[in-house]
Amino acid sequence: MSAPLIELRHVGKSFAAVRALEDVSLSIGRGEIHCLAGENGSGKSTLIKVISGVWQPDQGELLIDGQRIDGMTPRAAIAHGVQVIYQDFSLFGNLSVAENLALSSELQEGRKLVSWRRVREIARRAIDRLGVDLPLDALVETLPTSGKQLVAIARALMSDPRLLIMDEPTTALTGREVAALFRVVRDIQSRGIAVLFVSHKMREMLEISERLTVIRSGRVVAAGPIAEFDEAAITRAMTGQEIAAEGYHWEPAPNAAPLLEVENLTIPGQLEDVSLRVMPGEIIGVSGLLGSGRTELALALFGMRPGYAGRIRITGQEVRLDSVQRAIDHGIAYVPEDRLTEGLFLAQTIDRNMLATSLGRLSRAGVVQSGRAARDAAGMIREMTIATPTGDRPVTQLSGGNQQRVVIGRWLLNDPRLLILNGPTVGVDVGSKSGIHRKIRELARARGLGVLMISDDLPELVENCNRILVLHRGRLVSDTPVEATSETALGEQLAALA
Image 1 (tube, rainbow, N blue to C red):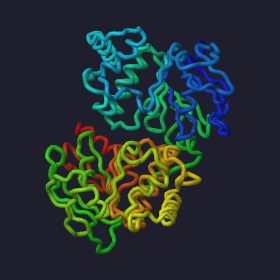
Image 2: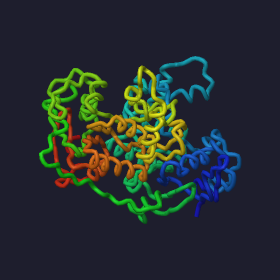
Image 3: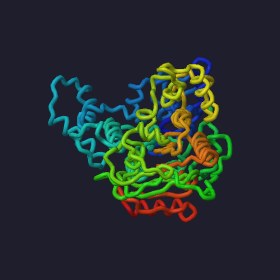
Image 4: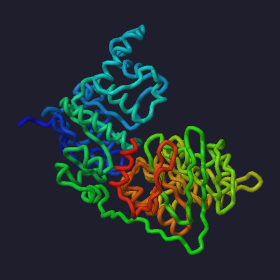
């Protein structure tokens, strides 16, 4: 029997007093799709960097084709056929697709003058090898996330890898885009290339992988053929506890008036005659394919699409939401889909991020009341159960789940009436995801907060909403009580709209 392509034996890695990996053993066979699972902070990224030569292990062995490799470096890893596609893709956004694909070849060959014909030929071969169609002259920054990912994969395949490591590759993809990515991954496997698929999304693990390794707190806690696992078993291994789906059961309060009423909301080319109603305490899901208008709906309600037609009423009063400040004044809060670029001030502390929308309320004569501000921030950190010893730490030191809690907590300090969540748990591990869902349900029940939850994650909608709206090409095509539908039915409905 031949040796595994890659094998780790009893690997350990520490950073100062923090033990990131402890006695980790892992093997990846040739042409195998192997999933590495774990929550944020479990050690997945450290393990990737050990395999790819970014970090040297403190103990243990790394073997390739049965031969021990000492002092692995990134250059040596590439020479051995290891390529990594990180979450940020590491592309040049201000360069074209062709330039991103050809740059490495041009540099390796030491060319001093650019032949644009040669650049396009190199790029075209790379794209054809992947079997997809991408505009070679388009700037990478103008591509959707799925397009950027395909560029990163095409670039990685140019070096004839034997192992392709994909770090959280589906974090920002829609359901259709995930399906397309999986087709590409299986095609890569058919060429004898192994894939290490790093994820914390259980259904994706079960669908794409052949073997699974789960790490928790730097240790391997479960490993084996994927057929030996189901969602509950993976959840237990990742979190160390049982996490059951709870559902959200809502009944309107007697004589309650609508919190939000939208009539014939229209934005040319984006939304057409959308009408909906949100009652106090309701959690309403919103789904739809890419380009359905769901984000445009959120932005219109948050005052970022002032040129709309139609009527919007808050607690019975007609309002004109023609600015973000006007929306905030009427009790509307919005948590954007990308917390890193739209939701957080990455150079600031947790406290400052938490207080960003409350400074007017906390100021007198233009001076912030520091004592009250500190109490408010500390109180919300406790309420949102954010894992940090102090709010003075940089927000970048928090896990994805805790960062998302900061963004949500920031708006709760304003005591909003309506909370709009666009992709509320994108990039959040299963344990944090469950905690955020629980908190949203508690807020809706206890505060009478209305919630619009926009998501591609159909289980997320079914488990947390009492109604689910589906948009298609800017129109509202269905409004269904959650007890009258299912994940399967919703998936079939969306597939029929494609």
